[in-house]
Structures are given as C-alpha cells and as structure tokens.
Image (tube, rainbow, N blue to C red; front, side, top):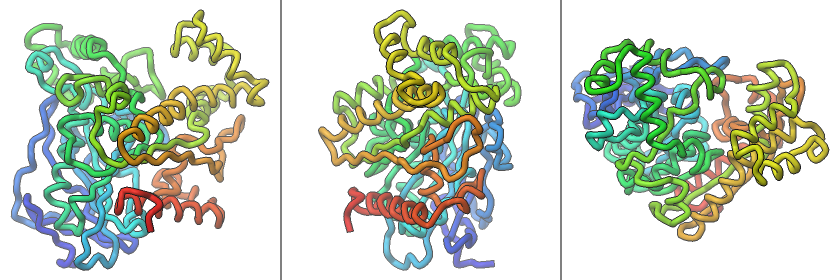
Length: 460
C-alpha cells in the first residue's frame, strides 16, 4: 500500500496506483447522473477510495472489437487522472480528453494516457459522459421547462468544473487546461468553444478529425419527434406523463428501443446528437464559429489524409466482402444533396474510379472531403481570424491493413496510436511501427505538450 498516492479532494480521499512510470487515479466520480436529469455534484466521503479501476461507462450498443470489458451504468460520470513521474512542486499543464464514438459509443477506458502524460509532461484527464438517448434527447416536457437537451455536453462541462477546482491537488495547473478530442470528441470541443456555460473552463483547444459541423446539425424538432417515438416504443404514449413513464423503464429497454430501423451505422442509430437547445447551444455551432462568436483561446484543428477509408472498409468491405459499386456511391451522394442537383452531378464527376484508381478509393475520398477535411479547413480559417490557430494533416499510412480490398492509408483515428503510443483495442499495432514512425509519434506528442504548456506547438 502506497499512502503517498492518496490525494484528498474536496469530495474525499482517493488512492492511486503506479502504472508504466506514471501515477494514475481511475474511476473518480466527478458527478452523479440520474436519468434525463442534470448531473449533480458527488456526495462527499471520508474513507479512502481505491482508484485502481475504471468507473462504469455509459450504456451503449456494442461495436465489434471495441469492448473494453468495463461494465456500463447510467451512473457513469467518472474520470481518470494521469500524472507523470517526478512532478515535484511544479504545476503542470492539464489536458482533458473527450472520447469519440458518434455520441453513441466509446469511453475513457479505451485509452491509456500514461505515455502521453509522461512525454508531454502534462496531467492528462480522461472523462466519461452520457451517450445516445441517455445523453442527447429532446423530450417535450423537458423542453417546456427550458431544460438542456444536451445532457452529455453538460456532463463534459461538469467534468471541466471538477478539473478547475480539484486538479491542483494532483499537480495540475488549473489556469492551463487544454481540451482535446477525436471525432465526436472533437465536435464536442467545438461545442465548448461556443457554449456559454463552457466559458472559462479551458484555455486551449485541439480538434482532431471532427469539425464543428460534424453530428451537430440535427434540427430540434427532429430530435423531439424521435424522442416521442422512442417513448411510444417503450409503451409510454405521447403527452403529459410520458417522461415519468420513460424514466421507469429498464435501461436495457431504452438502449434496445433507441436503435430504430433505418439511418444506422454498425447497427447504431446515428441521430442521438447535440442540438440547439437554447441553453447550452444557442445557435448553430458551425455558424457561430463562422461569425466569430466563440471563446477566445488558441486552437489546433486537423484531420488525417484518408479519414473516409475506415468507413468504407468497415461498412462496405468487411460487412459485405465486396467492393463498393456505383449504386452505393450514388445512394450516399443522394443523402448529401438532392440527386438531380448540380452539386450531385459535380460530385459524381469528381469522385470517379478514373480519377482515384478505384471506385473504393474515390468513395473514400468523397467521405474524407465532405465530412472531415473541407469543414476542418473552414473551421481553421474562421478561428484564425480571431485567435492563434494551427492546422495539421496526418498523412502517415497504416502499418497494418485488415482490409483485403483497399489500403487503409492514414485512416480516421490512426493518429491516436501515435499520440498515445498504445492501442487498447489493437495492441499489436504499436509493434508494427517503424523507427521513423516512432520518431513521428514523439514529435506529435511534443507538439501537443508544447501547445498545452504555452498555447503554441512550436515553442521551445
């Protein structure tokens, strides 16, 4: 037992563990969640709580190959603190990681932050938040009370408030907090840039492969209709009392019924996402950024070169064991824009097998450009008009390739292996990196660490 790893927070003492040369506290409760209510502060405790295991994660549909073995619970608001060796009296910059997963899946347990903490010389915090219908629904009775629909976003804000008040006890500098995230976590970073409740909770922001427009444009009316339909499927008819009825249903029923037919990815409905609720989001996040209505902090915005290849591989190649065809491409273009529009014609003439070598690569490039790269550049240009802004593209191709029909290239999420120097899901991927790739990893960590410390990645 190492009582030197006991930290007394305002809510009670926690005993950490030594892992890979870092001090780690896992499963620290930062708030308490009750179904479709705003999170409340944790209850104080006097006994020392062992913080050696991740806390429960939000209920979510399972994604093949992504199960960490961590139990799920609606009461999932836990965070993890990673402190590098030899901190002494120096207060280190703080980095708060917001995981991705389309606001439907994922957790802090998927990521080992010990090497990032050590090599970036930062206190790294990873957080859970409520997902899917548990975190992002618009129930008419709640809407009538002017209550936020974005409970998952509020959970993230609660975690940031905990960091602001408690991270100093772990050696972190609460005046230098960087929020960073990937995919939906990156979109979350943008939401904090424009949310009134997030002002002052962070001082730098890093958006990795998730622009302000990603998964943030669902109209409130659509979300409300979807929520009412969920209630009906649960046996709770529309009207007064529906909310109380829905709150009584088992979480497993809510999880199962919140995945209706249609508009699905890997069996997961993609529409439970943040909306303009008039409370946490008072406008379209993308438009607010374009209008310069965001918190003035330095920003890094970037993408990988081949974002879309992961989705073509997982949703077409590995699902159907066949290459994509013209109907697949045209069907997706029809979801982007009316199929008889001038834009549709331009997309069909631009993303062709002749231009890219194969139709699979062309379709991947279309997904990369439409959902990631173009919007990231647009965001970076808008940020740069007001704050120091840094833009990157990660181009190093994957060292391994499970897709027999197409090289994965620098696919969506590949840079995380380099940033964290580990992969909880595919640990063998780190063994496949060459010496030059490991040097690239070290350089990337230095950029992120310098930015967290100083607000500019190139400072020495």
